[in-house]
Image: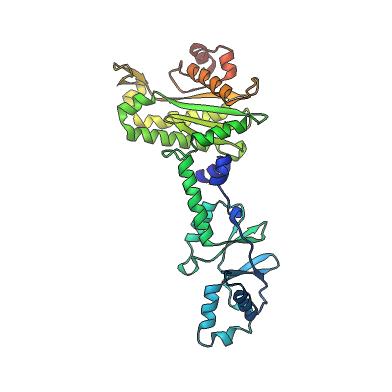
Length: 349
């Protein structure tokens, strides 16, 4: 589910290359009716040496597939030529064809294609649109395009989380400035360095990966399309939604995050709400449990016309979030209202 959402929603200009659907690489296909004689199909293949297969359709509905290699093998058997040539193609066609909708993601189609029987592994993938024949995709083209997609994903994604990296993020931020309504979430894990130094980089990686999952699964839903989640680097993430309804989303992220991080601490540490750890200054102190800060920048009451303005507003908000010793989300309105940590505590009680 997560991958499907990621494909649908994490799309920028580079994303257009990375998250292709099968309809983007479809080719036209020769179609024959089930009543077509085998000798006529033979003639089509003979006159088109590069043609690998033919789809058998009733009207616009694909019902069978004739791949040249298997077709010629049947004719080459003893009495095969005499037995089939005057008969109709529906007696020879393969009815176990793989049919997918043109909007299916290439990665998903590739998995379906590779799970076919060995004898059908290199058959065409038949593509339909609204139930009618749309074209075919050869396994050769599918494998080549899938490789390109995977290379692009590796090139433009964060290697740890798999989320889009800074190149795609930059393009997405330029794009959202054209939206009538938008909310940009700048998220980072508070005290992550201390956590990493205390529990080790392996546990740090687990925390980063799960944080990425929590953010993605919360933001990338159909209710938020076209939404976006990216990994700026380290413990910094970014998310975009095309509306102002941020409260429930922020609360959901914080609740899941705060619940997840408890697994790293002992019962005593959870009860106290801090650990004894070495700080950046090199001193041993009581350090609060890891939390998450979310700075929410919206164009509801503020004019934001450049990425630089967006980043500056976010930096100011993130600094204010650091005043709190627990997970928190703040908006520009909160900053304008000069809400400090003590006032916020009163508001949330």
